[in-house]
Length: 341
View (cartoon, rainbow, N blue to C red):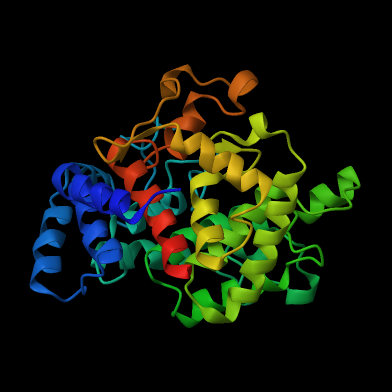
């Protein structure tokens, strides 16, 4: 996909043009700079002052939660009668915002992140499940709890991204999610399976559950991640190439999936993955050493044509399609392949 020389050119571009978080990530994960080095510390101070980071933290509430729009999402389109929860409304609440901060390099070492995690865990049941409101409703024996992986996975993505996976409470939640994996390697909301007579798992649930276990960085879950990736690859293999040449498709977050596929060495020579990589390479500016998004403006997205409207696209494509972020993600994916060789 890219030669060693092209990868080096990309890194040089990132160091010259990347935002503070991207420059920090480039040093840490492409140049293998130690977290405690003087250079990493200098770069991290710039991340803490980054405009987007400052904006996000300025909207955090006293109890550690969020319910606010900003550069990452439009303002809430509604507030439930009982008030906002850990994960609802979508894209503006705590479980949706923690992954953004985690991607920028923030972790539970930051007291603001720690407070957000404690807010989320205040809704945890004794069986490990993290509810939204009525904890008592779900505080039953684990074998009597219906499979509900969808929003649960999104919550765990947030906790995992900020490095909370070693907390015994979070570990218990991850164990529950892993327990819900089905024999086909995927996950499905039990209510949907029963109401719609589904015989296979759901790609949407499976992506989020697989990604949640992946970002936990716990080797114990590697087999579950591998099975989930094989399910996702099989689902992609059944689709027309034109359908899957997009950043978000039917639950698949392509950039995040490619990151997992490349790290685990799964399916990189398969037809669907080759099609996606060829599509992404069309955005490559070899002269500059960067990837430039060539799609429509986020404001023009529609559910009928794109599978998601502009509200969804604003969040799903945030820190994905910006030139520095896109270049970083794809350079890291290719670097994974080079390392495996």
